[in-house]
Structure formats: C-alpha cells, structure tokens
Image 1: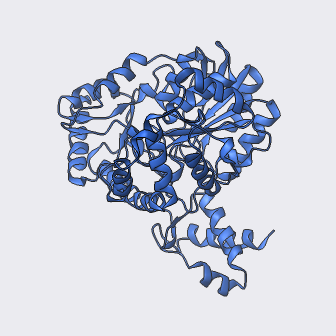
Image 2: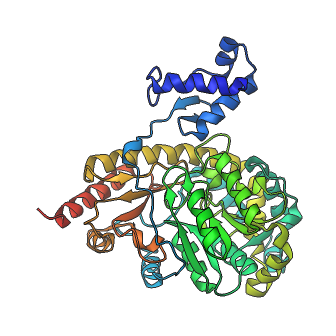
Image 3: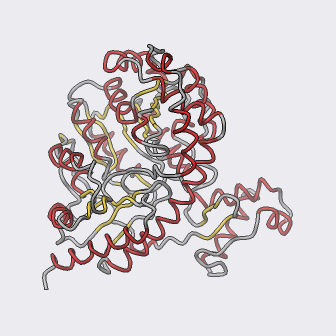
Length: 467
C-alpha cells in the first residue's frame, strides 16, 4: 500500500469516527505533510482520493473540508426499461421552451447561468468593439484559430492535450451533440444513455432517428457500468452518450477511476463515447475533474462543450474535440450550418487570453455553491419531509424526487398559475418516466425570491396530496 493510500485510510477513519464533522476544515496540506513526514504531493493525492469518494471537498484558497452532503435523502437509483426505445416528449419540451422568454414570476426550469455577473463586463464591452468587417466575413469552417488556440489551453485543466486543429467550433453544445450523433450512427441505431438524461440530448437522439437505451444511474456516481455492460452484451449499441461531470439533471460527477473504466469498456466493445462536458468548468471540485476524453488514446471519445452554461447561452459558442471522427464531423458541420459567427468567437478568445474567463469561473463556482446550499435549505424547510434531492458537485441545477403519488406534469401546471416554473421529470426520459420528479435552477441570486417560490411549490404539493 502506498503512502498516500495509508494517509487516506487514516483520514477516512477520522471522518467516519466523527473526529471531523461535516463542514469542518481539515488540516492543511503542509501541516499533514509535516505531521506524517511525507511529501506535499502525497498529501494532495490522499485528499484527491477522498474527493473521489465524496468524503472531502476542496474550496479554492480555503483548503479541504469534510463534505456536508446528507446521503440519506438522495434520489433513488433509476430503473429505466431494459430495452431500446424511441424518444417521445417533444411536445412537452417545446411547451417549456416556448415560455423561456417569460420574465414574470420565478422561472426555475431552464439551465441558465447568472448573466448579471460583474465579471462578464470586460467580455460585453469587448463585443461592442469588435471590427465589424471581420465579424461579417467568412471564417474557417472549423472556427477561428484564436478561439481554438485558447480552447486547447483550457483543455489542459481537464487532463486533455489537444492541438487547435483537433477542435471544431459549433453553434452551442446542442449542435455539437447533434453533429456527433450524425457522425457516428445510422438511422435505427441504438444509443446507450444515462437515465434520467438532459432532454436536449434525448431530442437530438430523436431527430437522428435513433433509439435510446436508458441505463440505470446512481445519483452520486453516475451510469451503472455493470448495467451498461449487460446492455452491450444484449443489444447492438452503437455509441455511449454521457454527461459524467456535473451531470444534467442529477448534478453528480463520476469518480475519476470510473470514468477510466467506462472508457476501457467502450474500448473492449469497440464503440464510441459522446461526452457532454458543458458544466465541467463550473465544477465545485478543485482541481477541475478530468474528462473521459483525457483517457482517450485511440480517438473514440468525441468531447462536446460550450460557453452556454459558463458565460451565456446567447453567445452560441460551442465546440467538439472529435478525435478520429474529425473529418466527418467537419463535413457534417459544414453542410448543416457552415461556419459560426466570428464576432463572439473572437470576443470569447480574448476574454480567455486576458484572464477574464478564469476570474469569472472562480467567481461563479463560489456563488453557485452558496446558492446550492441555500436552495437545499429551502427545500428542507418547505417541501414534504420525504422529499429526496440531489447534491450537485457543480453547475446550478438539481434534481428533486417527490412521493410517488405526486405527478410533476400536473404540479407544474398548477405552479405556473402562481408564477413558479420548473422542469418536470418526464422530459428527461425517452418514455416519460420520473413523473414524481423535477429539476430546479439555482443560478438566480435573489435568494428571497427563490425561497418564496419553493414555499409556494410546497403549498401546491400539500394541496395535491390526499388527506
């Protein structure tokens, strides 16, 4: 057993025995190194292992703390149908999208970041200064060299070594996901996907005339590799579609070793992985979690992301690291939408290059983590005692599971009448499962407004429950 494993065991025992309580600050890296006569890197690796076990969380410039997660009320492990299915729910998704522009009430249904952050001011100011002649002209179909260069530098934090030529810029992550599906499948193919899963991913599968094989998913550690392997043995699955870091809608981050196992499983069955990493930069973990792409040695992982969740969706700046599928992805991107607008690409590239993006991300991580904890507190205060709720490892969305007799589709209609919106659970499944679940957004800084919305939500639920 290595030195860091021994140290991790000792720290784990102290946490489990209650020497360190949830929320307590743990000894500093330097202090532990001195006490145990080991190197700083040994202590860092021990803490990293405990982070993977969700026992410890790192806070930038503050140190390591015992996780405060209450694991007793997490959502249930999902149990989707064990067969490929065609995706439905489009009308329900469209209905929710149509009310996106509403400004009245408290709209907690959309995965929208905080776009009022003062750290975005340099980017907004620069957008207005961009040379209009440059912005109006054609550009490289792969995207501007300036942006691809900055993205390749950002990728290092997620464990990836990418060249600018390894990247293709897209109009947001939704186009990236759609292009990747078309690049690796034929109509009628089967895609393995987490359950529940983002409704945009589901609708991309539907649009490509594919079938979804929903795989049981754990609210802390993600897609079940055992269930996935059984499905791979039984069905001709063409690709695996996952959001392993700050998952939408559950919020979990797969442990690093499990990400590598997933990659090895895809290797053994010689199939592709489409990895959605759109929330990776706003993970609360430090350092930022690695992507599955970081383990990719043969180009079978297509990594997709965008700035829609870290900056603003209206920028429409996304990208793909398509590995061995680069030429096919580039061709599909060209015939579907050609090049992307140049002005936002140049503005974002400059924002990254001058350090504005790093500063903005640090600010957002801290804010979103605080707002998560405040929303969890409100849920505990106003929703039924048997409510189960996820504990996001990053981003600004969480998943709520109510008693089986509460229908979230009926609940959302009643709540909208009172000015409160949320995303009902059936949108996150191919077959309309999770009727007693829903997703909430906590990016809104107005704590009083959000708490009042949760209180209203609790009152409506109480009215719906039988006496």
